[in-house]
Amino acid sequence: MKDIIFKKDEYIFSYRVGAVLIHDGKILLQKVPHDDGFAFPGGHVAFGETSDVALCREIKEELHADIRIERLLMVGENFCPWGNLPCQQINLFYLVSLCDATQIPQNGTFKAYDEMGGIRTDLEMCWVSMDDLPQIKLYPVETKEIILSMPDEISYFVHHP
Image 1 (spheres, rainbow, N blue to C red):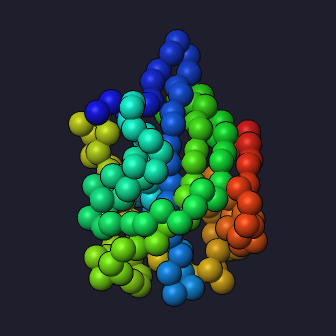
Image 2: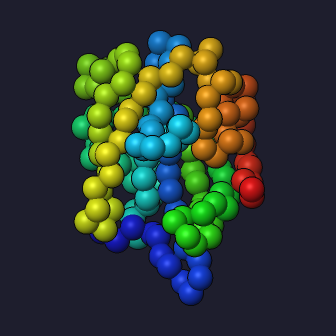
């Protein structure tokens, strides 16, 4: 399958899905080495794939866990740097639950990895207390307020630094 991410002249476009997994008062977030910020586990949607199927596939590949999609929580347009190029990214964030909570550690930090274009990126998966969420750096930043308020309707944001 071919991920929907491409470079065109002087910019990059990306279509990404993320999992908002809250369990026992903690949220699962990912972190890459040498960055003090956190992001949501997930990945890129492949051409011909629906976003919910893509998210289930990405979580299975990276965490070896099965998830249940509860609902679409947030839609975001994220303008950010990707290396030395500007990137426009469409993000869909789903509230999810684990089908089997024993498939991944339920506390602390554990290792995972992502692979894109034959390049492996080590990830640190971290359970962060919802009480600590206001103090951490979360990408995109607009998602933090939405997660803390957990609205019933789908939220939309634009991140343009």
